Length: 339
Length: 207
Image (cartoon, rainbow over all chains, first blue to last red; front, side, top):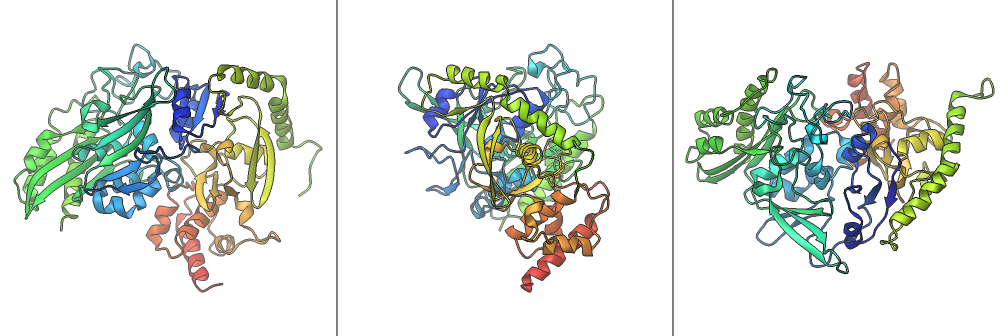
């Protein structure tokens, strides 16, 4: 790692004043250190987030809270281990607990945070090796296209074929109206904080066609603060990977079902690790709407529909079949959680 | 253990490290950082040169002078001289560097020493009794023959200790999930699970 300085602010306002393209916030630091060790990222300053206190009047940076109306508020600094073990998350939005438990290793889950998981950079081996040209590092080509791309995108891969690495992003996208709160500080003012809420399904994830250098619409001077998740108890997240530990998903699926009696009134199906951003599959959801909860033919139809429009590369056609399998498994896992 | 041939490889590397952190490069760096951050004068900015870091390791306080970029693992191995935690992948993938932070298993390679703060670090050395006698878990690793080449063992024992502290009663599946952050290339997993289960049973009996 290149040398860097280390700032220790104690208020959110001071954090925000320090943040810049070369001064990056550090929570768990797993992705940050990985990128720094590889020389992909060379921050001049790391801004420690461990000492900042709770912002008065705003949502919490720490802890899982159940708000009035039963929605979950999860601070960006909450660890994956805390999310996976939270009785409130398991009751209100179990898909998120599934996603947190499936990430990384026990050691990393003890340190890695919700915010860091959502904002981690892609796992594409070409992106993470400065030897190669890469669109995501300001280059002009994508060596993965004619290289080793077995694990890469099967949708939206015309420009860059890296997949979005975040488990929790896939789970959160499946929740209707899941949102994120961010803060910035007013320019030139004396520490006035500006809050912004963004819906996950409305422009938070950035496609490489729009800007290959970033994956999330968050400014260099902006801090991800918390996530809001409405109750979605009939939900599940399932992934398929090559190893069950320390491996990012080959394919992932989060399913949220709105159940009335023994019918599926509505469904939301999010697909992970198949495109540069997590995707909502409307064809898959449509195949479940109005169908019986245990109508396995409808599950199969939804799983097949989820692969509609896939554009696999020369060597990752297997991911289309894996996607079909993981969607089927996630629907089954969600149905198993209905009363 | 006796020191062989005057200068050991480790001692030589440690000497190089000390020169690097106390040399003029480090101090020039500090001055530059202070200038760049004049605007946020109230916020302490440390480094990029060597800066004082206090670590509590195995019940002992160590006052170090290290750069902010030094990982907890490097501080333990190269500065303090505790070589139980191993550097293998240096990316959090293998668990060879596992240490406990206030009893919770973390990867020493993916944490900066400066981030540890007041938390108590326990390495595999710290699991032994005050007289250096192996702990019940370490004894069970021996009894169940739960190691071959031994390279993963320090991290494996430490991760298993963290697991036992978080949940004293464990099923074999829970042990397997609990040590899934540790790789053993010899494939001794079956016996490692046996050793952890046996320790869990012993602790329940209060032994």
